[in-house]
Length: 482
Image (cartoon, rainbow, N blue to C red; front, side, top):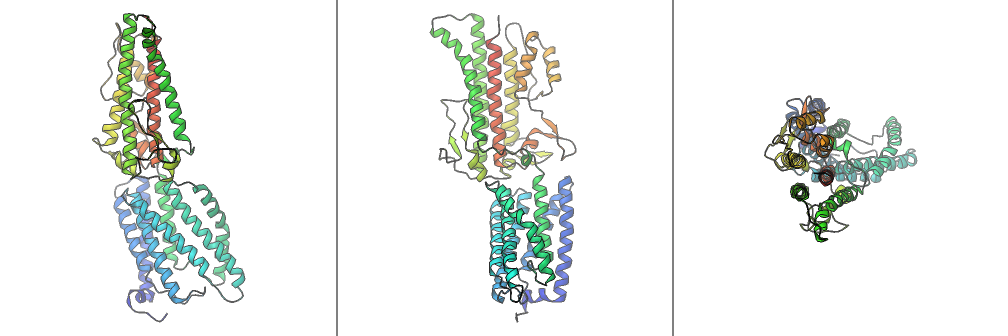
């Protein structure tokens, strides 16, 4: 090309290339250190990530203005220039998307979709536009198609993986399946002085960023716990309903006896009153978690008004059946997953940094502990027996719980049954985390870097546990003799 003025012209000069190369590799070194700091949770990791990835995005934008040399691949100068702009600007948006994702900033998903989608299109476009001449033309054209198709599918599979969309595994298999051929073809064509990739520092930087970002996003409980069963929501819903129905049968037994004209003894009336008290507390606990589930979906911008098998919400929560939670379509949720929304909305900022007045602590953890303690107090307190549970403290260790029960005046024959009722909901407040040097809060362990699918699965599990604990408590009370 003849035009050598402006920023593009300077970047093609020897001095411009030297400056770019030094800057590229300096940023690569900073990025590697920031990756280390982030994985080890050292101070300064966020600042290093912002500097390294932010600077990288700017440098990749500058790389877009480098004037391509006359192409040996058959691209006309204007085509090569436009493709250069499109590819590098897409890579710049992708890098910023990764930065936003790692820093939990809003807009990350939109940037990733735009960046990876456009980069994949640019890769595929280049593959179908190249037209080499000479003896290599016939051999090269097939290699070119497979090479760029494999890169394009692999790039798209990373987007599907991050967004938790269906079809991820199939795309990864196809993309990775072409990689051996891609590597062989690249090495062969490089020996023939045919370069399919172009600016190597930018390519290396892009690979490092994608690989490093996957490492950071892998550092989460969610990717190890995330459910793969597409019918998971219906399974948990069915289990919850079974526990609810089991408890209802025992609760309704007293009213059924009265309808049949049978009188209740004072002891039976006390048992009925205790079960009604537990029932009201269970309804409040169930409704509270249901509201948090809908809050997370609402904050992710999902449609909560439409209901049915094809929508996110299959059946909405109904006050007529207060112990039946909202039924969710987990397949649809997986297709529209929001990676960091649960963490942000629950007030979690890091392993040792969470909002004490946020939804997580105030609306989830504290009410759960209060219900759990109230449940055990109600079960163990009757007649001459009394149990007082500590306020806002979860006793998850069975030995500590047994010691607490023995200090109180409880029925000794019911000790293990009481432990079983309590353990249905017991969550240790501070638990060990392999990624952090020290104990972390239960909320952090379960919701840090958690996709929406996994967060809703955990919350649905909690609702099932509430129904299970209610049924076990009713069974203990119902079978109790005066």
